[in-house]
Image 1 (cartoon, rainbow, N blue to C red):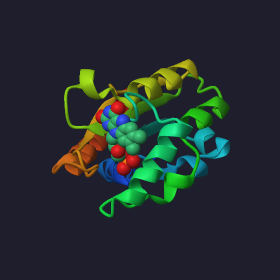
Image 2 (cartoon, rainbow, N blue to C red; image 1 turned 90 degrees about the horizontal axis):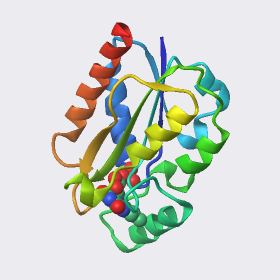
Image 3 (cartoon, rainbow, N blue to C red; image 1 turned 90 degrees about the vertical axis):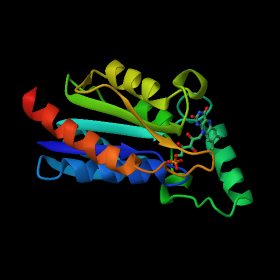
Length: 175
Ligand SMILES: Cc1cc2nc3c(=O)[nH]c(=O)nc-3n(C[C@H](O)[C@H](O)[C@H](O)COP(=O)(O)O)c2cc1C
């Protein structure tokens, strides 16, 4: 059982969550964590479970504009550091090239501000919709992991990400 976790990340939070999800799955299936630029069609085609996550921008998935905005914001805030993935491609373009999933399994997650989802939006909805359009089937409901107003993960979110990873590994065994 192979799992590939693909993340998009500007400030490193979604990257950290992806790594924590993988940690939560250890002992279960073989897990590879890659940023979008490294998620090649061969790697993805070999996965029994494809997990995809990204930051929420403007209530949904990022765009080239919101990604440029995020880079500009980081330039003005010394508390924000750009992730290695920040200058790479975003998930929208990657999905355009994604091959048919042939009913293989998937899960979607995002990071977003801590607040009611009606106010914040969530990228994981668009991510899951795209996975389904490509023929993937969800094993668990999409999940959000929360950041504060300064774009830093809220305490306890990495533990929650590990627990979600463990839930995913369990769901894989049971389905
Ligand atoms: C341009 C931009 C737009 C954003 N819009 C939203 C939003 O509409 N809703 C929300 O909850 N968070 C929003 N955020 C906060 C991001 O969700 C947050 O920066 C992200 O989860 C951090 O993940 P990362 O460190 O992996 O980039 C926005 C951030 C940026 C930079």
